[in-house]
Length: 240
Image (cartoon, rainbow, N blue to C red; front, side, top):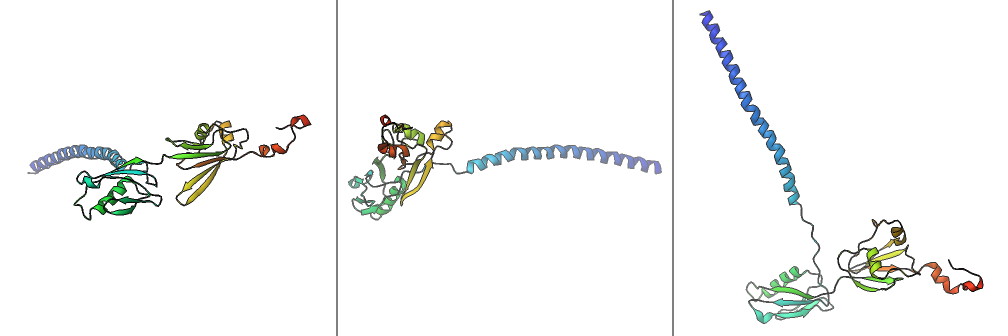
Protein backbone atom coordinates (compact mmCIF):
# COMPACT_ATOMS: atom_id res chain seq x y z
CA UNK A 1 0.00 0.00 0.00
CA UNK A 2 2.83 2.33 0.74
CA UNK A 3 4.45 1.82 -2.66
CA UNK A 4 1.12 2.37 -4.48
CA UNK A 5 0.43 5.47 -2.43
CA UNK A 6 3.88 6.84 -3.23
CA UNK A 7 3.43 6.21 -6.96
CA UNK A 8 0.00 7.86 -6.91
CA UNK A 9 1.41 10.94 -5.21
CA UNK A 10 4.23 11.10 -7.74
CA UNK A 11 1.75 10.91 -10.64
CA UNK A 12 -0.37 13.65 -9.12
CA UNK A 13 2.69 15.81 -8.67
CA UNK A 14 3.73 15.36 -12.29
CA UNK A 15 0.22 16.07 -13.56
CA UNK A 16 -0.09 19.22 -11.49
CA UNK A 17 3.28 20.45 -12.76
CA UNK A 18 2.30 19.78 -16.37
CA UNK A 19 -1.02 21.58 -15.97
CA UNK A 20 0.70 24.51 -14.28
CA UNK A 21 3.13 24.82 -17.17
CA UNK A 22 0.28 24.68 -19.69
CA UNK A 23 -1.65 27.34 -17.80
CA UNK A 24 1.45 29.51 -17.61
CA UNK A 25 2.03 29.13 -21.34
CA UNK A 26 -1.57 30.03 -22.08
CA UNK A 27 -1.46 32.99 -19.69
CA UNK A 28 1.78 34.43 -21.06
CA UNK A 29 0.57 35.04 -24.63
CA UNK A 30 -2.64 36.55 -23.27
CA UNK A 31 -0.73 39.02 -21.14
CA UNK A 32 1.57 39.71 -24.06
CA UNK A 33 -1.39 40.44 -26.30
CA UNK A 34 -2.82 42.77 -23.68
CA UNK A 35 0.47 44.66 -23.60
CA UNK A 36 0.45 44.84 -27.38
CA UNK A 37 -3.07 46.22 -27.37
CA UNK A 38 -2.08 48.88 -24.89
CA UNK A 39 0.84 49.89 -27.07
CA UNK A 40 -1.43 50.18 -30.11
CA UNK A 41 -4.24 51.99 -28.33
CA UNK A 42 -2.01 54.80 -27.01
CA UNK A 43 -1.20 56.22 -30.46
CA UNK A 44 -4.83 55.83 -31.42
CA UNK A 45 -5.80 57.88 -28.39
CA UNK A 46 -3.23 60.49 -29.39
CA UNK A 47 -4.63 60.64 -32.90
CA UNK A 48 -8.16 60.99 -31.60
CA UNK A 49 -7.00 63.77 -29.31
CA UNK A 50 -5.44 65.55 -32.26
CA UNK A 51 -8.64 65.15 -34.25
CA UNK A 52 -10.57 66.61 -31.32
CA UNK A 53 -8.54 69.82 -31.32
CA UNK A 54 -10.49 72.71 -32.87
CA UNK A 55 -9.26 73.55 -36.36
CA UNK A 56 -7.80 77.00 -36.80
CA UNK A 57 -9.91 79.09 -39.13
CA UNK A 58 -9.58 82.50 -40.65
CA UNK A 59 -12.00 84.98 -39.12
CA UNK A 60 -15.19 85.82 -41.00
CA UNK A 61 -15.54 89.13 -42.79
CA UNK A 62 -17.61 91.52 -40.67
CA UNK A 63 -20.10 93.77 -42.42
CA UNK A 64 -19.48 97.51 -42.44
CA UNK A 65 -21.10 100.66 -43.86
CA UNK A 66 -21.29 100.90 -47.68
CA UNK A 67 -21.27 97.10 -48.12
CA UNK A 68 -23.88 95.96 -50.65
CA UNK A 69 -25.92 92.80 -50.04
CA UNK A 70 -28.26 90.86 -52.31
CA UNK A 71 -31.05 89.14 -50.39
CA UNK A 72 -33.19 86.53 -52.12
CA UNK A 73 -36.21 84.52 -50.98
CA UNK A 74 -36.56 81.42 -53.22
CA UNK A 75 -40.05 80.65 -51.89
CA UNK A 76 -41.21 84.27 -51.44
CA UNK A 77 -39.50 86.24 -54.24
CA UNK A 78 -41.62 89.31 -53.55
CA UNK A 79 -39.19 90.07 -50.71
CA UNK A 80 -36.07 89.91 -52.91
CA UNK A 81 -33.97 93.07 -52.56
CA UNK A 82 -30.50 94.56 -52.83
CA UNK A 83 -29.52 96.80 -49.93
CA UNK A 84 -26.52 98.88 -48.87
CA UNK A 85 -25.48 99.26 -45.25
CA UNK A 86 -26.04 102.82 -44.15
CA UNK A 87 -23.36 104.89 -42.35
CA UNK A 88 -25.09 104.20 -39.02
CA UNK A 89 -24.87 100.43 -39.55
CA UNK A 90 -28.54 99.81 -40.38
CA UNK A 91 -30.23 98.38 -43.48
CA UNK A 92 -33.82 99.07 -44.50
CA UNK A 93 -35.55 95.79 -45.35
CA UNK A 94 -38.81 95.26 -47.17
CA UNK A 95 -41.49 94.15 -44.76
CA UNK A 96 -39.50 94.40 -41.51
CA UNK A 97 -37.99 97.89 -41.50
CA UNK A 98 -34.54 98.80 -40.18
CA UNK A 99 -32.16 96.21 -38.71
CA UNK A 100 -28.69 96.91 -37.31
CA UNK A 101 -26.19 94.55 -38.93
CA UNK A 102 -22.84 96.33 -38.78
CA UNK A 103 -20.20 94.05 -37.28
CA UNK A 104 -22.08 90.85 -38.13
CA UNK A 105 -20.84 88.16 -40.47
CA UNK A 106 -22.98 87.08 -43.42
CA UNK A 107 -24.17 83.88 -41.63
CA UNK A 108 -25.07 85.94 -38.54
CA UNK A 109 -27.03 88.39 -40.68
CA UNK A 110 -28.83 85.53 -42.42
CA UNK A 111 -29.90 84.14 -39.06
CA UNK A 112 -31.09 87.61 -37.97
CA UNK A 113 -33.17 87.89 -41.14
CA UNK A 114 -34.72 84.45 -40.55
CA UNK A 115 -35.77 85.61 -37.09
CA UNK A 116 -37.20 88.90 -38.37
CA UNK A 117 -39.10 87.42 -41.32
CA UNK A 118 -40.13 84.37 -39.32
CA UNK A 119 -42.72 86.54 -37.60
CA UNK A 120 -44.96 86.36 -40.68
CA UNK A 121 -43.27 83.79 -42.97
CA UNK A 122 -43.33 80.10 -42.12
CA UNK A 123 -39.73 78.84 -41.90
CA UNK A 124 -38.36 81.44 -44.36
CA UNK A 125 -35.63 80.36 -46.77
CA UNK A 126 -33.24 83.30 -47.21
CA UNK A 127 -30.00 83.61 -49.17
CA UNK A 128 -27.63 86.51 -48.55
CA UNK A 129 -24.78 87.32 -50.93
CA UNK A 130 -22.16 89.99 -50.37
CA UNK A 131 -22.04 91.80 -53.71
CA UNK A 132 -19.70 94.68 -52.94
CA UNK A 133 -17.51 95.51 -49.96
CA UNK A 134 -14.55 97.60 -48.97
CA UNK A 135 -11.36 95.80 -49.93
CA UNK A 136 -8.78 95.34 -47.16
CA UNK A 137 -6.13 98.05 -47.37
CA UNK A 138 -3.16 99.69 -45.70
CA UNK A 139 -1.98 103.30 -45.86
CA UNK A 140 1.61 104.32 -46.55
CA UNK A 141 2.29 107.82 -45.25
CA UNK A 142 5.32 110.02 -44.84
CA UNK A 143 8.58 109.62 -46.71
CA UNK A 144 7.58 106.97 -49.25
CA UNK A 145 8.29 107.12 -52.95
CA UNK A 146 4.55 106.74 -53.64
CA UNK A 147 2.54 107.33 -50.46
CA UNK A 148 -1.13 106.44 -50.54
CA UNK A 149 -3.75 103.78 -49.96
CA UNK A 150 -3.00 100.23 -51.14
CA UNK A 151 -5.07 97.07 -51.28
CA UNK A 152 -3.97 94.45 -48.79
CA UNK A 153 -3.93 91.28 -50.84
CA UNK A 154 -2.93 88.27 -48.81
CA UNK A 155 -0.29 88.17 -46.11
CA UNK A 156 1.84 91.32 -46.38
CA UNK A 157 4.68 92.53 -44.16
CA UNK A 158 6.03 96.03 -43.60
CA UNK A 159 9.06 95.35 -45.79
CA UNK A 160 6.81 94.19 -48.62
CA UNK A 161 4.54 97.21 -48.13
CA UNK A 162 7.56 99.53 -48.40
CA UNK A 163 8.40 97.98 -51.77
CA UNK A 164 4.79 98.35 -52.92
CA UNK A 165 4.80 102.03 -51.95
CA UNK A 166 7.91 102.83 -54.00
CA UNK A 167 10.51 102.49 -51.27
CA UNK A 168 11.86 105.29 -49.07
CA UNK A 169 12.83 108.78 -50.15
CA UNK A 170 16.28 110.20 -49.37
CA UNK A 171 14.63 112.16 -46.55
CA UNK A 172 13.26 109.06 -44.79
CA UNK A 173 14.31 108.06 -41.31
CA UNK A 174 13.85 104.37 -42.01
CA UNK A 175 15.29 103.36 -38.66
CA UNK A 176 12.08 104.58 -36.98
CA UNK A 177 9.20 103.36 -39.13
CA UNK A 178 5.97 103.41 -37.14
CA UNK A 179 2.99 101.08 -37.68
CA UNK A 180 -0.31 102.39 -36.33
CA UNK A 181 -2.99 99.75 -35.86
CA UNK A 182 -6.66 100.65 -35.93
CA UNK A 183 -9.33 99.23 -33.62
CA UNK A 184 -13.12 99.81 -33.51
CA UNK A 185 -12.53 102.51 -30.87
CA UNK A 186 -9.74 104.30 -32.71
CA UNK A 187 -6.00 103.82 -32.96
CA UNK A 188 -5.13 101.00 -30.59
CA UNK A 189 -1.37 100.77 -30.76
CA UNK A 190 1.77 102.02 -32.44
CA UNK A 191 4.84 99.86 -33.01
CA UNK A 192 8.26 101.14 -34.05
CA UNK A 193 10.35 99.13 -36.49
CA UNK A 194 14.00 99.63 -37.46
CA UNK A 195 13.70 98.72 -41.14
CA UNK A 196 17.20 100.00 -41.86
CA UNK A 197 18.81 97.57 -39.44
CA UNK A 198 16.47 94.76 -40.44
CA UNK A 199 17.39 95.01 -44.12
CA UNK A 200 21.08 95.59 -43.43
CA UNK A 201 21.29 92.43 -41.31
CA UNK A 202 19.19 90.49 -43.83
CA UNK A 203 17.02 89.30 -40.95
CA UNK A 204 13.26 89.66 -41.45
CA UNK A 205 12.25 87.76 -38.32
CA UNK A 206 11.09 91.02 -36.70
CA UNK A 207 9.11 92.12 -39.75
CA UNK A 208 5.52 92.99 -38.82
CA UNK A 209 2.58 91.39 -40.64
CA UNK A 210 0.02 94.01 -41.57
CA UNK A 211 -3.67 93.95 -40.80
CA UNK A 212 -6.45 95.73 -42.70
CA UNK A 213 -6.47 99.43 -41.92
CA UNK A 214 -2.87 99.66 -40.71
CA UNK A 215 -1.03 102.93 -41.26
CA UNK A 216 2.72 102.81 -41.96
CA UNK A 217 4.36 106.16 -41.28
CA UNK A 218 7.96 107.01 -42.16
CA UNK A 219 9.20 110.22 -40.49
CA UNK A 220 11.63 112.68 -42.00
CA UNK A 221 15.24 112.41 -40.88
CA UNK A 222 16.84 115.26 -38.94
CA UNK A 223 19.34 116.27 -41.59
CA UNK A 224 16.63 116.82 -44.17
CA UNK A 225 14.69 118.96 -41.68
CA UNK A 226 17.57 121.36 -41.30
CA UNK A 227 18.91 121.03 -44.86
CA UNK A 228 17.06 124.17 -45.96
CA UNK A 229 18.85 126.20 -43.31
CA UNK A 230 22.35 124.94 -44.20
CA UNK A 231 24.37 126.95 -46.77
CA UNK A 232 25.16 125.09 -49.97
CA UNK A 233 28.52 123.41 -50.61
CA UNK A 234 29.73 126.44 -52.59
CA UNK A 235 29.94 128.35 -49.35
CA UNK A 236 32.42 125.91 -47.89
CA UNK A 237 29.94 123.58 -46.11
CA UNK A 238 29.23 119.96 -46.88
CA UNK A 239 26.10 117.95 -46.15
CA UNK A 240 26.65 114.33 -45.13
